[in-house]
Length: 259
Image 1 (tube, rainbow, N blue to C red):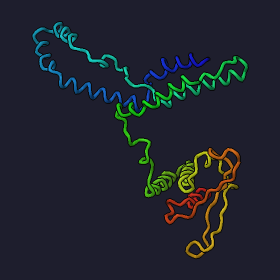
Image 2 (cartoon, rainbow, N blue to C red):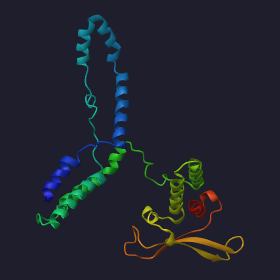
Image 3 (cartoon, rainbow, N blue to C red):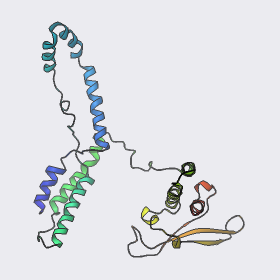
């Protein structure tokens, strides 16, 4: 595998191929179906078509139907004008580079790394045209923005759902664990890679003098020694205080899960 073969494969088989599934393909099919119905409704041939069928019978009807112009894209439902986005193309390149590295480590060949200037230029051109393609496809610009997420007033809804679904069911432990995992991420801003390996010895409480209604406040602290942004065992901490609403309180959820 050299750069020429990889570049030819990406240009002919990947970058110019339409997606096989996904939100973009479904949106394009919906746009085409709406446009196709609108063109049929505005076509003047439909008004004269029933009269021809009545005078000439089935033969003349089929002949007139075959004389109707076929619009591009209507004869093939699977035809798509879309092309793959940059992240998909980059995934193909990464997979082939991993294959090259595996073959090189086994001593199967000694070819140079296939990704060089030409392939980098192709990926750059695809990334630059991605913004205009999204506009041409009328993609919802509110997706994957700051509007995605939840508000503080919606957090108690998760607690309410966990409690209502756990009554009389064997999955109560899993529901309370899901609620606790969510509140760990919300209160301490932890990634999932930090929450999943967390164990009881990683948690401890720390007193806070002159805090709280009676001056004996405390906070929950967790110790983290490894994560996505901590690959060398650096000691990090996460902390959370009690919330005024027990439905949004991490400490309350932890006590419920332990109980």
